[in-house]
Image 1 (cartoon, rainbow, N blue to C red):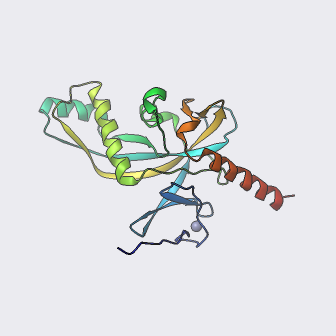
Image 2: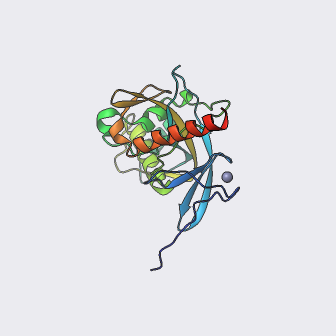
Image 3: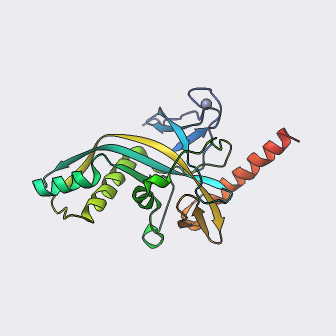
Length: 222
Ligand SMILES: [Zn+2]
């Protein structure tokens, strides 16, 4: 098999794209987009920057996927299906896009955001030059996880035994969520949940990117 080599340039403006070692999507800050490469084809997603709800300075932004779709239920009883439709209807589900290990211990930010979706709003103006990266989760994997989260949410209110749940015509958005370091953890500035810094593989690199960008800004504006 011939290896596929993709040039990491923005399909819109031809600028170099930014990303970390394990990332599956790379960003162009000029166009404010993330570009995912699937089998050599570029899928371009606009970046949505979340506003901090906790009044502290964001040090970096990490990715969260927003998944919307229609519930497609099968194999359940009419009662189960009615319960699921009443609870979720047309669900909006959040799935962390960065590496988040040990979410069993620390809680899962995606699930927390799904429960408190009203807390997430767009930042105005968007902090376009802030450090952002670490998108390790592909779209198909994200949709599967969103379906799992939706099923878990229904399961808390009605028995889902035997029922299958799919999201029909899912649409995805990438949200950049503000974080700051707090001891050995990263605190998200929307809900205030903690993620162990260990969970973010390339944190050092991400923060050094930040320093480089700040340095570059200083050079540009002496
Ligand atoms: Zn561009």
